Amino acid sequence: MIPVAKEVGSLRAIPSGGIVSPTGNPELPPEKEKEFRRQLILRALQTLQEEV
Amino acid sequence: MNNIRVVHYLNQFFAQIGGEDKGDVGPGVKEGPLGPGRALQQALGENGEVVATISCGDNYFAENLDEAIDALLRFAAEHKPDLLMAGPAFESGRYGVACGAICHAAQQKLSIAAVAGMDEDNVGADLYRKTIYIVNSGVTIARMVPTIQRMAALGLKLAQNRPIGKPEEEGYLRRGIKRNEFAAKPPAERAVDMLLAKLHGDEFHSEIAPPQFAGSKPAAALRELSSAVIALVTDGGLVPEGNPDNIEPGRPTRFTTIPITGVDSLQADKYDAVHSGYDTAIANRDPNRLVPLDTMRELEREGVIGKLHEFVHSTGGAHAAVENATAIGKDIAQRLKAAGVTGVILTST
Image 1 (cartoon, rainbow over the protein chains, first blue to last red):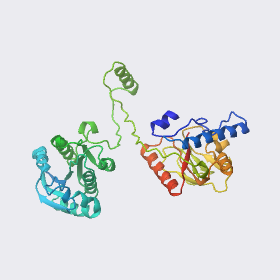
Image 2 (cartoon, rainbow over the protein chains, first blue to last red; image 1 turned 180 degrees about the vertical axis):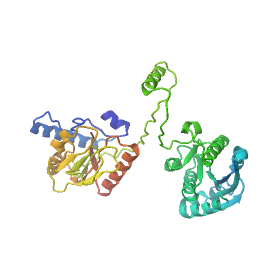
Image 3 (tube, rainbow over the protein chains, first blue to last red; image 1 turned 60 degrees about the vertical axis):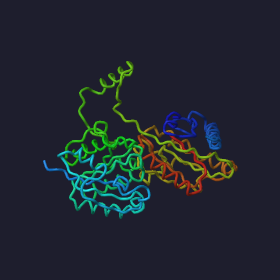
Image 4 (cartoon, chains in turn purple, blue; image 1 turned 90 degrees about the horizontal axis):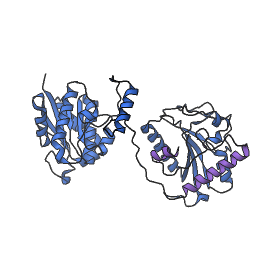
């Protein structure tokens, strides 16, 4: 969805876990999925700290 | 056919009252055409008559909108017009807005046809292109005569209830209106024709007007994450169980505001995803996959972020019209700003 986000003018965008589970990954066992989510959010927070 | 009676609106400059120094002059009226009105009379020929010119200073109009419109419409009504023409205003913003406002008011309150002229980038065009006909004048006054001619032709058609052609044929700005029409060839053939033309480097015209996205200024980077107030927003259609605000699963016109004070994680039996654009089963089994509340609470407890904002804003973003999506986004952004939120994570499906 990154090209779509850019097309509509989003300035800070990172790839998510997928269309049906942006902050998850149902393929992973629960604990691994939580860790995946945490890493994704940390990356999002890092992106908020970067100048555009 | 009877002569169409036309009243023409001009600002103080074109009504030959004066320049910027006369911007405070209030509403006025004169019999017959004035300034550009003479070209208008010529363009109307025997089909119409400029019976009066109404005018107002741009500053007066901007600062006394209701009074100006009331007075100008009163002046216009005394001349029993069939049609109101305004401008052209070219790229002059205050004049453009005044032309749009007076045309809109004439349509609403006098129930007569109205046409304005201005550049497509004039702020008045953004405000009024959907409710009135605006002929694109371009930015330069050198285009006065051709613009007036198009305005006159379009105005006469409107006043005589004749069919109006497409924007590119008549020279007016797109109003966002779709009409059904019969095509000579089925869509598959038209698409192949278009593709062949493209491959040959020939000219072709798409039948779909691409939506226009306004750019936005990037927000400054967050300096201190540990004192930041972070909000969660989603276009993935998160709702409390039962969708109490009744947000639409697609073609959204509104959003829902979900309080999350004291909520540590989004439980599957308390929240739903309502969205016609993706399979919501996976998010419904664990809504934190859509809105990462559990993780944000963790990071809040650990002091990685200062605070998680106490509301989640959510809409079902499938097939969203750009105008509606923009309005929803602006509304959410204003609320977040007012609440002191410093950063947003928006999860999109």
